[in-house]
Image (cartoon, rainbow, N blue to C red; front, side):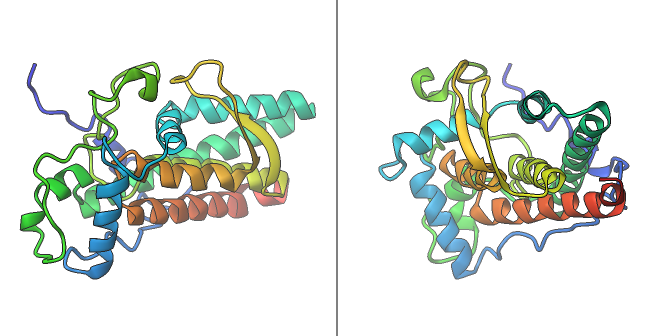
Length: 260
């Protein structure tokens, strides 16, 4: 009790990837400079919309933020199983679909964790509370600022499962967004189109089905959801989406395109 939360998966940063060349092959451009106007703008954005008592975040945005805080491996593989059943994919195509999906996601996460500990950038909860130390005269500290993802969030908003918290590892880049981007781009590469009608489920809201008409819509919503949750700066999500795309594109081009 009282022990600090630690990243249980830090070793992933130096894991040997499955299909990309190295854990840092798709190194992102990195966080914005603390003294920049662009950083201050992102700081103010998450400070306002990501606060637990935000006056600008809508109920729908709060719900989406909580909905997507579920196990992505289970979530996206369930989507794949539904595609296999609905489209009557044979064994060969089914195997290819799952391989593209899960190998893209795994390598994207390895590259993501390598980025996290390369940049070691602070999360909004720390940045906002300690803004007096960032060297930017246009950011204003709020030592009591609390993100939406906090154990005090009512269960009616946060849904079932463990308390929602700021993850105990660096901000940049976003693991959830990179995972989603790699997975959704793998789906799009397999089917040859971004346009597909499907639904997603979440362990936090059993029985709920959220319908989408493009794979990219999932990535785009998760990108925003992590900001609404108060746990990421926008740059961490935008660059994560690009990282996931690059990983999925590389894996499809170099390992699956000829066989599809």
